Image 1 (cartoon, rainbow, N blue to C red):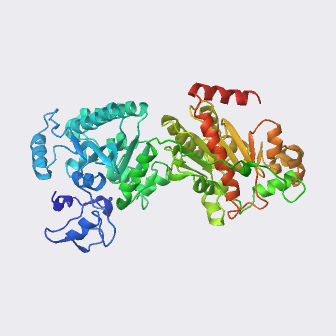
Image 2 (image 1 turned 120 degrees about the vertical axis):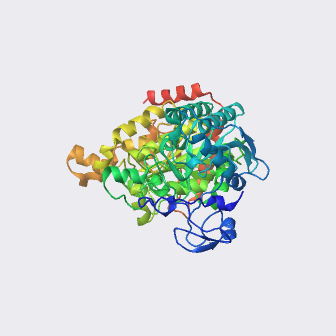
Image 3 (image 1 turned 135 degrees about the vertical axis):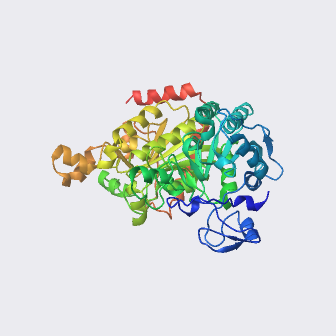
Length: 565
């Protein structure tokens, strides 16, 4: 593959598109010129730097076969449908000639290549769009190749990884190009219903009908830094609304912030990232946990008196108390965070993704407060917005698809109370979680590690079992709110805590929780292992028991658990 093909020249002077969207305009020879930083760069230096400008970091487009060489294990790629080419259904003048010219120039038959490959020894179907061929626009042949790839992947029970790059629909094929959106989407749905993984990697640019179909239908959506991703292009939008678009609009990072991309991954890291994702979807047997019953023996601490409910409220809110992310790091391996609700945004008050617990793939979701002031602000003090609950539900439904148990860590003063939260449907988002979790066909465990405030906590606690740390709390609302509503005096919060029955012991007596996990006298990151060592054993036993049950039995028992309350 000649590197100069990567630097396609263009005569268009498009001021609405920024440097990442235009191909570098460079002379032939040993030196190339990056049209973003305008610096002269050595061709070999670009080649050795994964087709990234060594001066400014600008990402050049990669020819499809070169991308395969970067991603697939050496010699493992087996191309499918190599000779499938498009025709000229509308008899559009000059279209056939243009196709032939591009075939000769690029060495491609069409704008996408598909086939089977291995990544780190794990077999997968791989598809790569190539922008040099009519801007990787989607005509009949492109849609057919992608559809066939998903059909064959379903037959062979393989995951699919697809690198997108496109200007959208192929205008020369008219309505038949539009129909490829529906055709590819239907094939992806069949593949998904078979319980198989689909990962998309969005590269620059991914627009139009491709964005509105197969590019945005992955279980996991990744993107290269700075890639332009959108339905309508920025130039069209500016001409329509007669406004200048904000910096970074429609870039990968913009999409991640708005809930549509799980991770923005640098090119040098993408193979390793994909390998880790594939590993999480290859089932392994559970690695035995050595049970030490002495760890689980409750004992009185130094003859201390029993703490009051209000004292436990204060402890549950302590700033140095370990947060949800601390438990994820301590108890699980290979955690791969997934972000966004696919509707509006990514709420950092809830974090989650796939991980392994002693070799078992699981989905982990945690309400996250953070421990420093900066972290508190980033995570909105653990008060989720609708986007957070919708993200959690997206991950739970994905767990159900891949038969992964769900483990939730609950720690919130309550769902975020604000104008924006109500505008975006806070009540609906919580209600939907309760509705869907009640019938989720995989084991669910929820552990209250700090505050369990109202419906904001319950939205992650419709589970087969609910456990509480010794000094955590779980209540209908905060003691301050209880006192304010019932007694019109928030200053009586301490008194309210005593009557609300919100401690772990109270809730065990009421049949609301199944287990209490003892805490050290001062629970912080330094004494954390005293809790996680016990929790590890208990989680192992929970999974060992619940995974023996059928889907129907799990759902029936979960229903009966709440029916008794």
